[in-house]
Amino acid sequence: MQKLKRLLFSSTLIAILLVSWFYLHVHSSVRFPAIPYEISIPAGANLKQVSQQLEDAGIILNKWTFILLARYHNQESSIKAGDYRFKEDITQTALLKTLTKGDVIQNEIRFIEGWTFAQIRQVLNEHPAIKNLTTGLSEQEILRLIGASETAAEGLFFPDTYYFVRNSNDIEILQRAYQNMQNHLQSSWSDRAESLPLTTPYEALVLASIIEKETGLESDRAEIAGVFINRLRKGMRLQTDPTIIYGLGEQFDGNLRKKDLITDQEYNTYTRSGLPPTPIAMPGLASIRAALNPSETDALYFVAKGNGESQFSTNLTDHNKAVTQYQKQQK
Image (tube, rainbow, N blue to C red):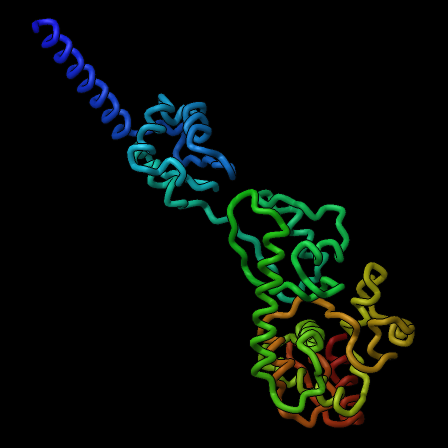
């Protein structure tokens, strides 16, 4: 009987000591190597792997206390991958709460209106938090991977700021930007003006890309769209320099010459009628809406004034006068 009492007493004492030890550890501050401190939890890491990572980094003294804590709170499978930043010392309980809530650092990348697909690929390749899976792939291979039906990537991605966790890959981000563009394009197409000389949303996207590159001032956007729509209705050539520049590619040295205007190529809207075969850049929502809801205007010409504004004309005589006037002012 005496032995049993001693055994029960010893067992109770050990249990109390273990509980006290556990309570002390999980409610004491973890030891970050520095403040602020960042840690990255890799995708697919389980509780034991994360606990070992925390122990190896010197953040917790013993991985088993963290494992027991997670199991006690039924959070064994709830830790979320991503980058975490801690600005002050916290307890293991608070650390577990942060890792299971997924309060991760949001990385970001921005695609700018008027950028080409080549520029998008460059910023994706250069971003340190993005895993690049498209190196060496053709446009067609990339489009297939993101589930796009188009054969050319130009203009298909919506300009916006995209947030993501570290080690997201470029395919995932391109898929989001592509779907974003599809959603905006379809919505704008549904609200388009009547009797436009555009038969598909893709044609609207092509025109919107030209408007994006031609617009220097927001207030001119819809009227520039109106000029192009008028020209398409009349069967006039668009005669827009940005399409030629795009077609020249790396041959363009910053100066557009007369020979460039008369040398035929598929993006030369001086020598060819109608829209070019693909967009020439990534248009923003304002340009898409302008293409599908242009100003009602009689203008058929416009020229840049040099201050961001455009001068609009209804006939060639007035347009030539405006060209002469503003070219002189810019010299």
